[in-house]
Amino acid sequence: MTTLTHRGRRVESRNSDKKPDSEEDAAADRDLNEDDPDDSKDIRLTLMEEVLLLGLKDKEGYTSFWNDCISSGLRGGILIELALRGRIRLEPLSLRKKRLLERKVLLKSDAPTGDVLLDETLRHIKATESAETVQTWIELLTGETWNPFKLQYQLRNVRERLAKALVEKGILTTEKQNFLLFDMTTHPVSNASEKQRLVKKLQESVLERWVNDPQRMERRTLALLVLAHASDVLENVFASLADDKYDVAMNRTKDLLDMDPEVEAAKARGTEMIWAVLAAFNKS
Image 1 (cartoon, rainbow, N blue to C red):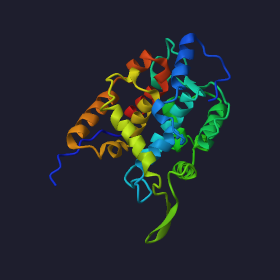
Image 2 (tube, helix red, strand yellow):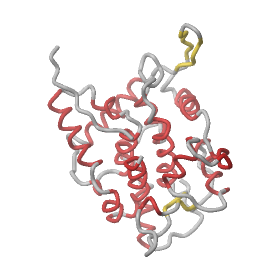
Image 3 (spheres, rainbow, N blue to C red):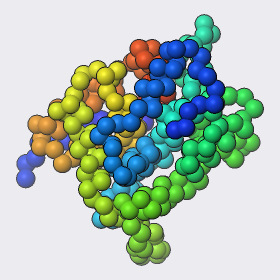
Image 4 (cartoon, rainbow, N blue to C red):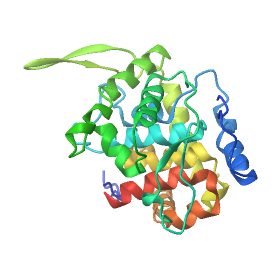
């Protein structure tokens, strides 16, 4: 769906209501629910809010008109966020269903998260008569389905709802801009330090703090790199770097995203949803 591109040289929690299936599941849940030590701030953002913040033009307050990937990327973020909060998981491995994209998304707990988009998605997952795969859920939540009987699962106005949440958290503001024939509500960045902190965190994860092993990366950081790639906003993260550091960051991120999701998911069950979302976008 998206590709990593290189620029040329410059010339000028609630816990689950159900018990984990095994001690390994319990360990995975503990890992996935650990807070990122670098995020111990007053402002707490969901993965979807972080992806949108990375995609927004700071002064203009809207995403690129040419970006047709961010909508599905945000839906993938919803699935990962729900997994990180212990609400959903992939069905267990079986002899018949081994690959990530063949395994269904199962509900672990329908306890409210307090986030409107997450809770709406939880209700959709709970309401389905038969479980669906990660790829199918991304298609359903974006409304990109050929089945007219499943259009009710589409999440509408996701970007606007996320922007309003960021306004409430004091990171964005709301303005009106005139575009000749119509007025558009925009959300310029008002708290630049929060976005800079997010960008710096991702830059450092592939530079100063690079571990060359996704299993040793903080889960939310790994998820955010995957989602930034899927949403085609990764260039925004590294654009401010000097050319030599930019090349290192992009090459390392490419190496990370080129890893086999099946192999990496098998190494740590707690990251299965992250790798399943990447596999879905790799196939698209």
